Amino acid sequence: MPRNILPTRLAATAALLLVAGALSIPTAAATDAARATDATRPTGANEARSAALGDAYVLTVSTNPAKTDYGNRKVDVTGTVTKADGTPAPNIPVTLREVVRFTTWNPWGDPIDPHYYEPRDLAKPVSDANGKFTLRDVEIDHVSGSSLLNVERDVQITAQFDEDGDPDTPQDGYFADTTVYADAKPSSLSYKVNKTKVKAGDILTVQGKVTLPRGVDPGGTEVFLQTYWESQYHVKTTAEADGFFVLSVRVSRGDEAFSLRTAPRDLYVRGAEQKLPVTNTSVPRS
Image (cartoon, rainbow, N blue to C red; front, side, top):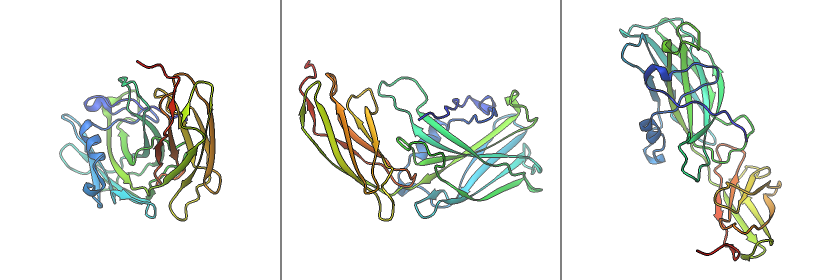
């Protein structure tokens, strides 16, 4: 599942890199806010702005609404470009992107970027006489066809422009971002295993079924079988049109973390996870 890894945001304007495809990571405070529970999330507009001491411009971007769901996936993206004194900045081209984010698999606790990113260009509106720009009916969704394993529900909307159009001079670049929460429907997972006690060399077979919300086709849902804690999964398959699947794996001596995970193809359907009641008698005991 190769994805673009975007650079970490630097401090102040040095962070505002405009290299094609490059985007920034939200601050810790923004990340914490983005992970708020559904109950505390606003359902109206949300806005983020870029401003730093000495900047010639201030860029803002917002969406309305701030939350989407299975049946309502579109938002209006609006924003403003103003000069440092607050007066409107007309005729400024602003690049808008949607960024779907994924949690990085990192069981070792390494100091790496905690996210993967899939950006896509939306449009490049130009600010009007009042410094405003608008892009209506933006569909907040996952369109690349890659796996949705570890997808996050806070989809980022970014806005950026560069005064001279040269990405090699980031000191005159401006960036703002905000997030839209994609509220997903739950799914479920049932299974049975051919044995609950295994040893090295045994074949463990898992049969099961994924159940998605009514009206959603379970066919193509990815199913992952983990056997060892350092690996996110050992083998994977996709569910048939009726939701059924079969996975088999040869057990190794160190396998001791047996779990199933699913990843439906729709951003608005959550995956499910089940820890399997399987014990490997070959695991060395401390």
